[in-house]
Length: 416
Image (cartoon, rainbow, N blue to C red):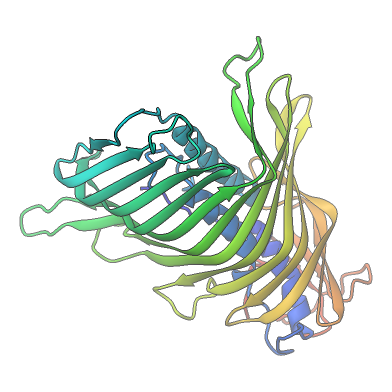
């Protein structure tokens, strides 16, 4: 199974929460002066982007990469990069479908038990812009290399359009299950259920052929492509210890949410130089195991822009420079307010670090502006009144008018 959630901290969101923390303590636009901002909820931008990318690989037969941590140090830039790989793998998988002229072609799925099929409908035309692929499963079980069952249920419909494609999911489920053994019943290890519509439209899709020196560098790039999620929900469950007790049960939802994606690349060697994501609309996240979790939020974005540029030293990529800008309205247990974010110095995420080691953000809300400063050692300072100095308090509690210092970006992820 493939997780669309990061296992480690959403550090872009944590840094944003730094400013929101101080702003909310001073009174956000619709918040309480006594209510600090929710650090986890303010990771909404990254979570929204990553979940949207993950959805693009569902139900289409694409071999989408896992978004789970591979054991190496993760940061938000890496997480979003993985998400883009998922999207592009899905696009390449769909593009690889062969058009068959004549009657609709239905291919049975090779299920060990249950049933499944894929139907390609071409509408008896040579054009692909009106073609549809429908996949339907009823307890379709296969055995993976670990000896576990991979089970599918539900329906996905993939429709080509003149400007992109639509995917519609109806109770589409993908599970990894430990088989029953003796008195022990089946144990669901991973489970994902998807409903709603995923649309990709507009913009252009650019193919880049590898150079003579790097013939394997073929890639595809996007120019102002728009992804839209309508009445979309994705539910995920995990039982990490295979003991029948869920360790994760989360629901991500979005309606009328859009993300515009643009790539800048060097045609000579197909190397990506910049990635830009623009978020608009509303998403929400709910931890079903803890209704009072700091993770729970609803967030509405207005031209919230994430730009990522690779930093190279002697031709070698050493990390990502990230800038954030735009407006986000957060509704959560810890804070309710509208905040505007401006990057005054790009955040730098080294390849092997979870926290950035450079960068400054200005976060405005409730009539005041706070400055978030990232230090070379990964520590974070909050300059509440943006006066250029950090006047640390000693009680460890963020209060109106106080500045804060945290040793790491994770330490700054607080709701207290």
